[in-house]
Every structure is written in structure tokens, then in C-alpha cells.
Amino acid sequence: MYGLREFLSKDVPFNINGQLVVHDNHYTPGYWTALVAHCRLKNIESDGIHIVSEKNQGYASAIGIEKALNGLDSYCYERKNSGVNYSELVHLNSADDTNKATGTINSCIRQLFDTPDLSSFSTDLCEVVGELHDNVWSHGMSTGFSMAQKWNPPTSSGYCFEFALADCGLGFLKELNRVGLNCLNDEDSIKWCIEKGNSSKTLKV
Image 1: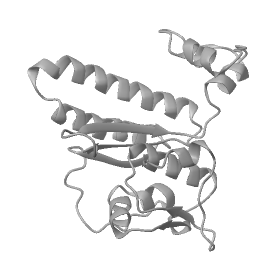
Image 2: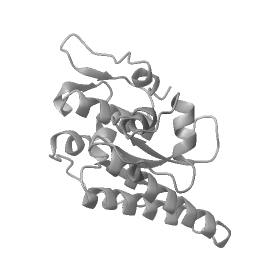
Image 3: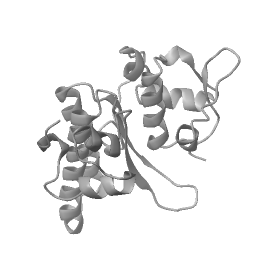
Image 4: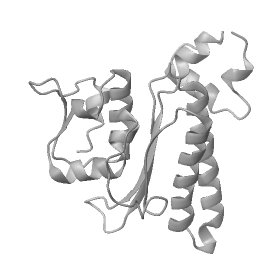
């Protein structure tokens, strides 16, 4: 339903004109960040993407897909709800852009979870978003993208808020092996990375 499997399986759809196809489906932030990270890796600009439905075309423009891939933004409306219900796609290519992405997404979190009983959760979540952005900026080799969206799952009467990051860096296992920590598999490398105080930046290459 959400399209992410296309990138995980590497079965990315192309049409006869060589354009990457975005079908007429509902796609969440996980898909859009994976899409632009994949396109950036393969040097595909926005005109190399064929978005089938007008609805998805409008949404892609609103979240800034052209700006993320080409550096240009043809969206002609004010993004009034950016920082409220969503955060547009941001290429985490500099400290300033990374901080901007963190600030916009955390603005959404603070407004969506603004009751006193959720204040501690909101603070912790904002901290996690900042740390994840910093990690991708530090290790993602400028291949990272980020966005967020409040949306209504079709099987639920409520809404969810999804924050997504995607990058084409080395990955946990290759990064740790690169700096001399010989992990056997992805699971071991992830366990090491999530231990408080562990960082590949403290290891010598």
C-alpha cells in the first residue's frame, strides 16, 4: 500500500521513457523520503519521475520534491501548514538544513502533542528527532532526506504523525567495520549503536 517495499526489494518501477513511476496509491513519508534518496543516489531529477495521479503530483509539489532533487521550487502557494501538520522534504546536506528540518518537525510535534500530560513525551520525542537528524548528517554522506506528516490511516478513526528519514550511507554494519569494530551482522551492529555512549565517531579508522 505504501510503496516502500519497492525500494527495499530494489524492484523500482520505470516506464518506457525511463522515468521512475509513482503509481496512484497512498504513500506515506517513509516512501517519499526513500524515493528522493534513491533518486539522488541515481542522479534522477524531478523530471525523471512520472507521478501518475494529479493528487500525488500536487502533494509531491507541496512537500517540495523539486527543491529536494533539483534545488528549485515551483510550488506557487504559501505552505501555511508546514510546521503544523507536516514538514516538507529536506535534503540534509548542511548543518543549517539539518537544523531547519529538526525545528520544523519539532514544531509539528509540540503543536500536535500540546496537552500537559504529553509534555514529557513531546520533549523526549523532539530530542529523538534532533539526534536522528544529527546522526544522518554526521554519517549519511549528504545522502539523507527527512520529512513528516500527520495523516489518517484508512483502518483507524484517528490520526498518526509519521516522521521519516532515509539515506544511502554505508549503514550500521559497514560503518562500524570501516572504523575497525568488527561486528558479525546487522543485528549486532545496531545493538552496539543504540547503546548509550557508543559512537563510531569515537573510534579510530
